[in-house]
Length: 245
Image (cartoon, rainbow, N blue to C red):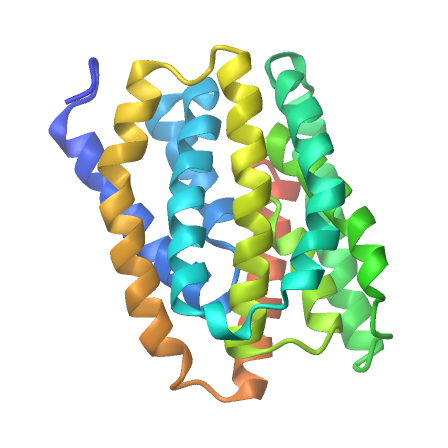
């Protein structure tokens, strides 16, 4: 048991990680954004963000394995070109970053993205090379505020990806980004023994949640699937905008 962590706190964290891993597995995103305020309340901000990164790495890795046939590998590569350098650079700046402002800015952007999708039901298909920019923005924001999965969702959806293809491609992109963040956090001495132990203890819950969500997603229609994603974007945007984290 990590020092200073009582069993009740650990159980709450495990249940939250499992439930939100299911959400991520079904909608392809969102668990990290909602899990961040829970982890902050339980562990404090400087522990919460690297622990969340470890948890997301396991959760997304599980989704990659479960959805690997549908992954758009070239798209993941373009995303990584932007995400890796920005995630490393922003991760090194994490300790001094103005997190409150960035969280609220992201909240506004998420709501704008949902409005854009509603006003333009058939948004233009983004080119593969444009995902270098998507990856760069994602790497920057994720390293500073823990999770920006909802920020990338409209861009992956605009490619026409649904179900296995969407979930697997988004998850593979996230794995690359989170690995880069962990490198930066390690250099910045944020990966303490407590953080690593917490990440290891929460990993099984995220893997079970990914498995449960994998089976649930095939019971949902394409229309309902997109509505779940957009509803998650709205909730996440409001949470960020009004400082729930």
